[in-house]
Length: 162
Image 1 (cartoon, rainbow, N blue to C red):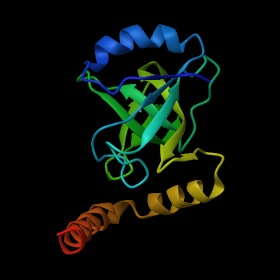
Image 2 (tube, rainbow, N blue to C red):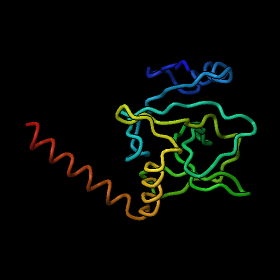
Image 3 (cartoon, one colour):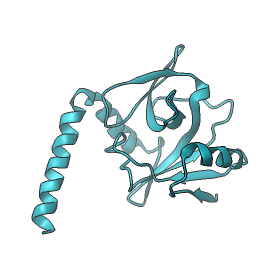
Image 4 (tube, rainbow, N blue to C red):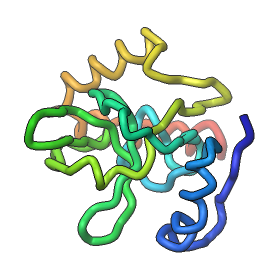
């Protein structure tokens, strides 16, 4: 499989208009997302997501990482946390607020896998999914856990790399 890699400063609407037709021909798109909404499973600026266009018969499922566009025009990469008759609901891994429901038409691409520290992780990896499920249970405590993690990380960097 060949990859298209766009880590430049092109506005998302512009490059999606050009890239989507190419992806529909069977190509995957590898992106390095920005932001912290998917920490700890997808770290912005370090990890990568390999995306493809889902077919018309694709069944979106809980734990899928999806790229979608919200009403404000922003493109978001989050995990599906629920699918029901009303639509598809998403949740960033570091967030506590569930977004949705979204219609299928909002979704542009689905992550076939993520690349984290040179390892491919997808929904067929049982250890990965086990960790995702445990993390989902910890949803009310995520802000405290992440805040503590970053505080410790900053202290360690000051101590070890001064």
